[in-house]
Amino acid sequence: MPEIAFEDLTAGRVFDLGTVTVDTEEMIAFARRFDPQPFHLDEAAGKESIFGGLASSGWYTAGLWMRLYVDSVLLDSTALGSPGGDEIAWPAPVFGGDVLTGKLEILEARRSRTKPWMGLITLRAWMYRGDPADGDVVYRSRFTGMFGSRDVPAPAQGS
Image 1 (cartoon, one colour):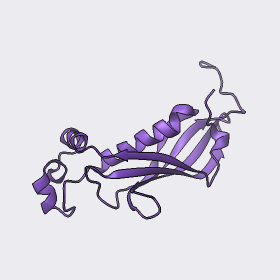
Image 2 (cartoon, rainbow, N blue to C red):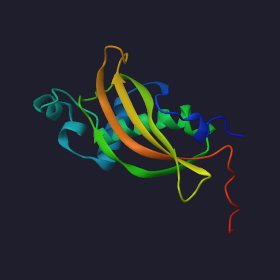
Image 3 (cartoon, rainbow, N blue to C red):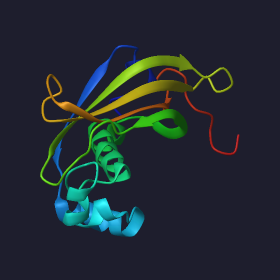
């Protein structure tokens, strides 16, 4: 039985998701495949850019946050996916070797009107360089997560 269900995700709850160190080779490999802009691929181009150094793709940074979220929350939950979000931002660049800290805040929780066995959770994602108390915010998003309820069973498949 998963530990985290809709009923556990109350407004105001904050999850510390842990840390991850940015691997420069992995960062570049991601950029080469998915976001091949020069400042993500080449140190000299990065230094000449607005970032002042070889910077991570924002999508790679989002992926690092997602991995922390999966490991810290989703794998031991009744998660049912996500229909999307309405905000994503990368307010500061990320560089190889940075130590990033992930956080998750529950902004709102409501039961689905049409599927009472499911809750819709509005979530705020945060990623900081270093300690959240004094580090730079490098990633922020707001999205909806769908989670199964512990007290209202889902209908059987095919029902």
